[in-house]
Length: 389
Length: 179
Image 1 (cartoon, helix red, strand yellow):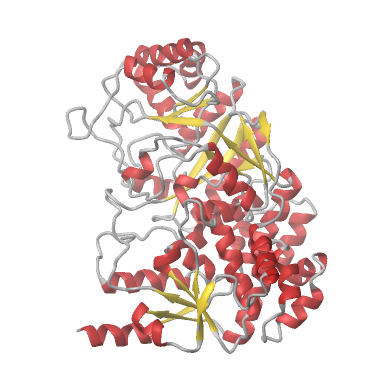
Image 2 (image 1 turned 90 degrees about the vertical axis):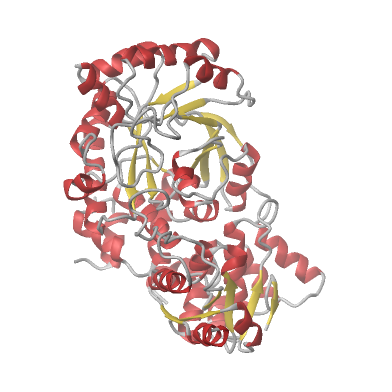
């Protein structure tokens, strides 16, 4: 196995990292060194620019045929307590009355509802386009697209073409979990396989649609499975170039059947972000999804390879069902503050990374201001924060 | 210090500050001004190198009661009001700067209750070498294993994932006294 220094030299020389290199990086004990290398790449690609958007998350139904062991969101049958499927009118009203005029994206993922006809989804999209035509509809995971294809007897491409005609513009990355069958058959046995998920994304890319891609980590998978997953993404990206962003998703353990497992820690989150940035040399953006890893870790991840924090979200339910303690949404100003105080430049983007507004960076880092104040007041600099010994 | 960190410190023009910091006596106000303007990972790397050299890899876990009586460590009282208070990165920067400005005869403790367990864990690679936390008040990151033992297992795992070893001696003493 190569040393970290050898891998760093190889990466800096523009050589592609191998499976073995990825594994060595996953095992690298010096997290700061790993983060610094990933940060070099992040800054080479994006400088200090850090992206966010004003978006709205929506789940039209949590009724789901699949029985994924990590999921606390889905209800297996429509009559179960907590099962919910919105009406079209309710969904259209939610968008029509969304208070922020700067909204650029509606992000929707759903359960795999066995009772809804395909036309129900087409009508849902058409109605949204009627009430706010300017809002980009990023809807349906690769797993949903595959489910529709099987259930309604169409190819992935046919499903996507009909949804595109109804208003779909791009796909979110959810549902990737871990592609390797040794893990997938245990945690998500009855939905699209890794190959089928990737085939749905490939079809979207061939139609000119951009998509995101994810990885659910920190449950029963090994480092080998993680690296294998990342390289499968890289492989498809070499062919299509259609992935615009990779989003690592930390496993949460409440209200699901994997409650005995500890959750991944902040250190694991930062490691995954850094290794992803280094291995996915052909995916432009790495997202530190604040709902998944918490605001503190997401912010520091902006120094470990991430260049995007996701968006305002407004009302997230999938992670919150599994125990997430972060707010249901953040304001635009809160996101800007997180980015500025990380020493980065906030860039509000649309779904496809078009710039909506680039904002100025903070005049001086927060810590520097505190030190200056302490110096001016001639207070002890032993510690910046209050302390007792 | 490794090659990458040495190079990053040199690029930041902080080689002289690093030399003084590595003596473990705590740097002065002028050095602090320079450090506070530097890249957070460079400051963290230096704080971690100083911690490793002078304090070793052990992480002490103390209950708040026991921590009150511990005289060989600085206990950071960080503003964790969060809504309008400092962000996570700012808190980590403060922790790293605290390590660099404090003589290494003293340990550096953060409170998990104050800044959260995730940030307390991350603080261990930013110069901290002790965590103050109550084992009895479970955060339930292991929902099926409530109580002190689960909390201990959880903290032990968190610390091991930073490549360090946990020492619970003081907490065990406190638990014995309570029972």
